[in-house]
View 1 (cartoon, rainbow, N blue to C red):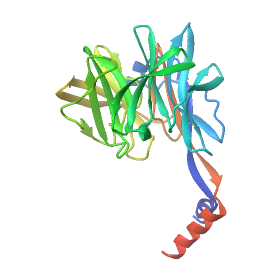
View 2: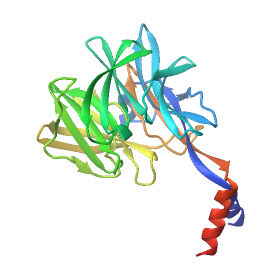
View 3: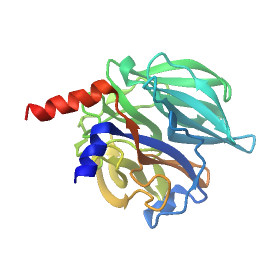
View 4: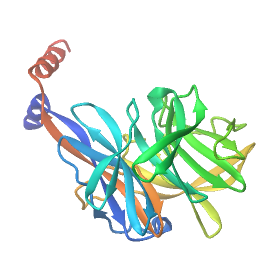
Length: 293
């Protein structure tokens, strides 16, 4: 016990994420956990998470959150092969760059909850040049906005910054750019094990499924797949049908919190726990707290 306590005195744990590619469709996760090729060019000073991808001119482009430890802030980057560059500049912390195509156009709706809005961006020159197309939700700290089309309506599923893991919200519209109306049952559910969005909803066998986070143990600890049994402006029902645990035999064994469809392949992320030396002030603070117990 003493070595563990001594380690916690001088070192602090922190989460470090990486992204990977699965050479199987997202529906494969309904029955098994396919192999992952980890492609993340992360360093100890930064990491990549929340991957979403599209194929353009037969090439795979991956958008992700690039989190820089020193700045404690995320930005949206694009990877093509192992080359990475800034893709979508936002004035606040940005993550979860949810991508979609509609009518031959590319759109992105990243999370920027500190801005109190959810914004739809359109690519003017994919993948490097984007413009602000529409504010889909205003006045809410929208977390992990997940935009998809179902039975003639556009839907946004999300949680909120004041309680990002438990309560699921939804809005709908006839048009991609809105306006979006609140679902009659908001919040749709209150469950830390299956509410927070975690990637792209998908249809398999005529049934709609929704990836979600299970944060009961910790943030980003594992994923679940929910089967949506009923979805309309006044109704909602889903049931958990699959649990996806972290890849224990990988470089990222401590968590998983994104599962996104890209053609017949799937993007995932994974978490590992690293340690860094505490500052002298941090060590003194822990010692002072121990003395006052």
